[in-house]
Length: 237
Image (cartoon, rainbow, N blue to C red; front, top):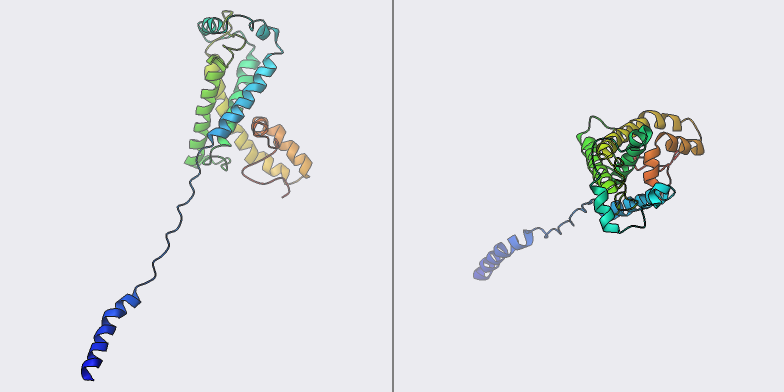
């Protein structure tokens, strides 16, 4: 009997540590990492490109260069890139093209998970990182718009007539466009937010569009209301 009791105690001592082991924890699923939306960026940029070329077709100087041998005329047009000026009025080079740079920059921002929810935050390094990425995309789009076969040199042969293609657009479009992006961020934070708190929803949406025109056009390129904001909801909500 004594031997049986000792044996039972020994078995309990051996088995007990097994009972004391905690249940195996189920590993948590890995966090979803948001990546840059290339599909959205390319689609919206292509939409903008189509709009721009549609407007260019209203100009006789564009239509008159559509009937020649495509690749020969395209290469000859590229060879016309020379000097700073391109013969366009100052308002086109220093206002119109920077607007294009800002629109394409906002297209990049609204497809970048690291920048889409960032408003005017000059003290935040992430803000400037996001906006410099937008500058890079604006530069890439602007260069392709000027020089690519699907751009002005290929469709309408800008540069074929010497003196119609210069470096001004390649430089001013992204750099001044970057300035417009930062300016619209500041206006949205310092002016629009304050004004929309003291008016009705319709007027607030109008203010958003009028005071942030390039952001509004970029919104249209993704088929959203021009007054849409990723940093906050609709006015009055």
